[in-house]
Figure 1 (cartoon, rainbow, N blue to C red):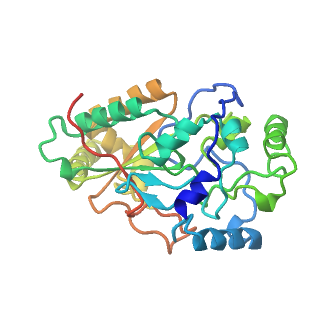
Figure 2: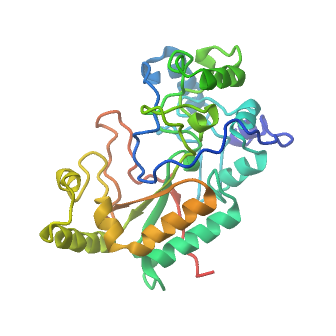
Length: 322
């Protein structure tokens, strides 16, 4: 059934389109802020989306978490759907500037969106070099991709934009209408596909053009957390932490990652890695550090968006130095 669902949309390549000018990438801090338009009513409350989600789950197109079925262990996953069961269409790929080849790389875990297999292999190799040099114990470093470059769609905290939300942004509004045409809201995506706001030419809350999507990288390592804690204590005792750092604490109270200042100061090679690959990819690469157990399960907290360890995660494997 999974293969059948995938074959429905197989066909000739769709050439990429330049839907938006190449504005500089946004910040690489991995935060959610600065990439938003005015929020609408939650898509989770829409009856049509609820039915679509149930149908997709019944057909085995998405799992209980709303992710496309398949796994990295199997080396393959289904055609991209959002967590309500919306299936990506050829017109979506054309607008987003994605080719069928890029989707196939994504489906086979060969390269996240916005990269190619060679780049991804080199980026991964460089990352482990930055984390642990010779890496005699690579098992102490769990690395996973998060965000839309890994899952094609953003989480349910980032709804697909509407004409109403973009009413004061004429360029983005016109591009949305060109993309969606007369498709009724109930038949559109519920969430934002990769780089939606960038391709629309949308502006953030401060009126600044939204840049290319960041690539989120979660690193879980007790060894690194211990080193970062030492650096945090050193910076705190020397009075070198900002009021904001002190207010947020060593572990971020909302997102639970280790303080970025402590990580940056404790692991300068990781910072250099992120800067270098931002330049190579033309998008921010945003590493976040957690204990070896990974981010906590937040499915019962707030909006339910959670990046805790799942079997469907995209794990970056250690490979010998290139």
